[in-house]
Length: 203
Image (cartoon, rainbow, N blue to C red):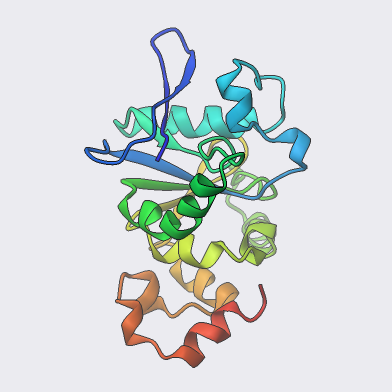
């Protein structure tokens, strides 16, 4: 598992592949843009990628991690060496555990605006409509990224915290079909195969 960290002068670096003694870390959940927009493992190794649109998500994740007292963070676009089939396969099979072990999971909703200051009924309805219709909820990976981590927090593209999975559990349940007990940490063994398939049906 490779982790990211920002140095004292703002330089971004990757750790070596960590097997044991993995430090506490934050993890990012997001929707991918076009391939040319996302920062890759090779980009970071070669010291470039800052000009890509996806770099903003990396900056956000690192900055939020620091606010939460975490030095390290993980972003799937650039922490997996996809040129190595062995590393890619390991990442796929380890993903649930990586999200489960994260101290914080930040969900970056690029299509959900920040709350407006007026807090009017109309403003809240518009925000909730955008939240419910976010592309993030249609991803296959969304299910495990909601269930596995203990702490899941949602953010706008501007970095405003929109809520967490406890505060928003009713909306998340209605959008995804995931039982509230599962969102609250109940073991997956308590849910039937039919229940699990229903949650995955629209993905």
